[in-house]
Image (cartoon, rainbow, N blue to C red; front, side, top):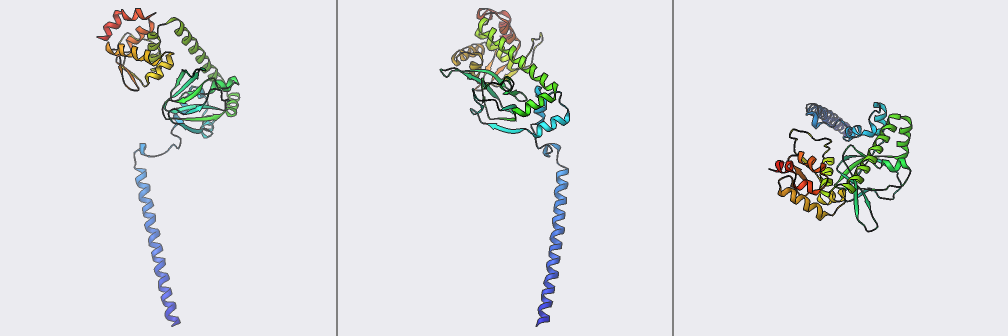
Length: 294
């Protein structure tokens, strides 16, 4: 009986070894097949970069001129963060703890008065930084950073940014240039507020948001500005009713098409004519604007 039992156990052991060997061979073949499929996938389907926002960070003017090693360390130390529409990356009056670079979405930098009225100081687009001024000034944030839509950003703490600036003079120069641009934008906004009509200010705001820097004599491609009327009103410093009235008049003349969250301009040349006019009377009787509206 003992010999029979041992023989049965031996047969079962050999059978188990064969099954394990066959399973191992089948698993190896499966791995080989999967690797072959991945290798032949189109490059767009392969996940090479675990940080898809890296390219946008590299395009940020704040980091231009950094060497590859420093930029790599900067990317590795970044902390991703997200804010849904209406949420804040930081509030007005908060101490400056981080510097942000937007990688997706849109962020409104807003100031509020004691009555709760808000003014959009700037709209942040992808590859642009925000939260920088308070860090360098050593003051609390003078604006709040609110997501106009679900927005993704990456952030670095203030100490890291200060250390990078000390080690890389090019980054310090870029920071000064960015803040100088902010000051110049503030001067232009103040001048517009005191010397130009609301129509002129609306036209200039749309051109600025569309990144149009100079007019051309030839027809320009149509532009679309993704912006709600309320945001445009807060950016220009007027009521939503006023913006709605102006856009309705322009739409009636065939100069714009207004959607729920976008403004379409078929020919931006007329925007330059409106932006250059000294007051509303110049716009209404401007024969060039009337010609482009036909």
